[in-house]
Amino acid sequence: MPLSLAQAADALDPLARGLAGRKVAVMGHMRPDGDCIGSQTALCRILRALGADARCANRHRPPPNLAAYAEGLAFDTEEGFAARPGELAVAVDCADLGRIGGALTDAYPAGLEANIDHHVSNTSFARLNVMVEDAAATCHVLAHAALAKGWPIDAATASALYLGIVTDTGSFRFRSTSPEVMEIAAALIRRGASPSLTTERVFESESPSKFRLIQRFLGGMRLLENGRVAVGEIPRGLYEETGTSKEDKEGLVDFPRSIAGVDIAVLLEEGSDGVKGSLRGKNPELRLDLLAAKLNGGGHRLAAGFNCLGATLERDRERILGTIVSHLRERAP
Ligand SMILES: [Mn+2]
Image: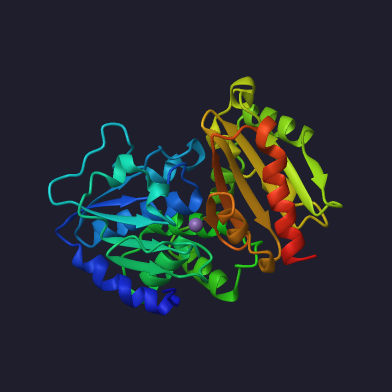
């Protein structure tokens, strides 16, 4: 059941304090983004300060522009991953167990201790499930709880919490940017988060190869349905050609989203195992989470993703785009 931020803080406080003296793995979703790295590292730091022996675990390492946030913490990846004796696992920013990946979750046969998230599609997969549908970010849920319950917040923790809020609100541009979100951001800045350093680290540290990827992505972008759908693609091999990797995909879908009149922005990424899609919108009535569910995915009303296993762009592009266009016609003719 979705909770309010205050209810979430009440549920999280006994959890965080009760983990003192325990070994804990704070897990996030594969191919971690700013909110994932921010909530993993912030919660890990808070739990340590409260007396737990906490580490971060993610199938993939933090992308280069977010690596600084994991400094000083154990951040383990799927390579040789094992649970420590008696260790409990807590997931942040993960809508379901599949987002964490079996390489990590299989190490905890008794299941996960807690699941802290803000995705509407969250499947309540842990013993304690704390899902705040209205939260702008998982870091918003954690920051609210930390401030309300007096958890230790040093400058590095404040910076990590701020990171997740900045990235998931699109630098305070998306609908989720409420007065309350700004108040929490202000409280984090007072505790040492730096807006300018965050911008530099996260948004102004792109590589020249990323620039080549952006050029190619923009060159192939096109509009459908009288300009209401904008699609960009990353065909198989483009990462290799441009000297980039999957991590460089971050932020590309904001280009189609930025065009006037576009209701649904689509990024299609072709890999060896199928076609992954990212969906972004401006109108919550369009329910992109429901659209993604039709394509083996999920997410939020305005930001969702899907994964068409075994698909290729050449064979399945029209079917995938057809599903997107019919959804748009159904929800907002
Ligand atoms: Mn998030």
